[in-house]
Length: 66
Length: 498
Image (cartoon, rainbow over all chains, first blue to last red; front, side, top):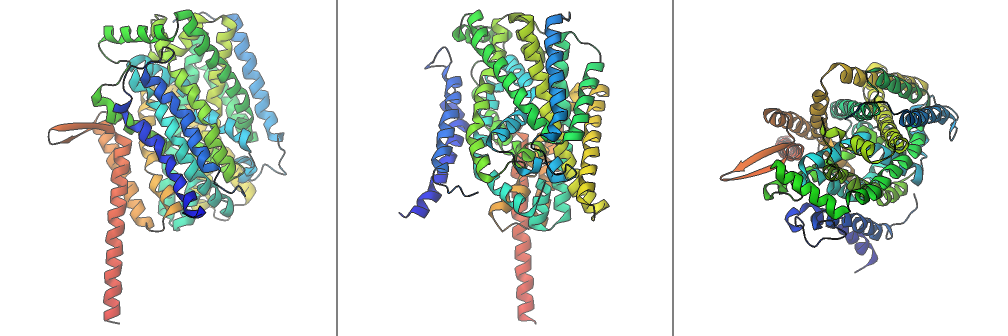
């Protein structure tokens, strides 16, 4: 696979948060709890750093000439 | 809620407000432009806001005072369902990361100031431009009114009664926005966001300690929902589609609003926007924790006249007067930043896509800035009058419809950045179908955000704005296919019979 098509495919990781957060039945449970937070709450909060990391994966493939 | 005036709280509050007012006027000289008499300077700050200024400005403008009041209020009232704001404000960022740098580049190259400029430049259609611009203005007006509601709720908590404080605060805001343009909210956003961060972090760290920890907070909320017989810490399975579609629809609509787009256009580059997509989620963490104040309201055993009182009442009940005053100031100043940027965004639309398009096409750069400045005053005065003389519910209903309406500009604004397939009239027909069809659906449901669709025996409840967008896109695709087919037939006929 050449560099150009890799850098295009990496954009697909931006769709992962949509799947992880919009498929609600997956996380609508109380356990496992974390620091007193039911799963429903800490799971969604955990997607904040995960989403930032996924955007960073794309960001590092870009040329920053603008 | 008691309404005795706490002198310490009031002093802190007034002090913070005066500081911000001075800043608002000083802002005209900040990063001093050669002239402010140019729409690019007054309305977009010269398109030179770097990563940090953009972070404070868009953060202060997207997470509004009303959010700080309304999200915890909804969570207090219904529980898990109110949390859709969290997935919404997460998935919005991959979208911003991928799409907004493209939009910024088009706007920068051609000197566009509004989304409707971009649409006109792309399709050359005055009617599609007008549809996008008019939708932007009417969706923004109730949003400004909502900021006034947020401000009014902290005035009430401070014991300030009557309409005078609200009128005074808004007049000051109107005057410094007029003189400094977007530089005023950009500078004030620094103060506002730092104050909000301090208030919310103190609240989410100290209040649970006073109430026995987060486990106790969740348990108390659970008990309250069970006693009430509605709401809960988890969603009912029938709420899944509503929750997911509210999150998705809101995320797609968020950066179609003139105020968020103004923040995007004002930034210094595509890379500034990408960095911000990665840095702005810090506010989402804050919002998620803030939402939990709704549950803390149950744990603290508050008795409230209105759900919107939950945040002010918590601060009053659990913090000393000086800190409550500080937090209330943060919320009230938090209303000024978005209200200013919203009025600027609406003013830019009016100037570029109505005044320049229809009234005076030869308007000078200085003339454009002057029209926008006056429009920003008119827009703010209109919202103030609406809040003072119309029932609050009217603003809330219009805000709900505003979200649906602004979402209907999505295909016209975004599709053309990536594909060269749609024609202006197909997009216009789609916009009209989504706008009118969606409004009719929402109206016939009694202005509820959720519409129930029945397929045979099963019923699915979805966000009405997203349904309207589906109608919009479907109509645009079908119309485009039909017109293309028609054109090909005509071309074929001419080819055979030259």
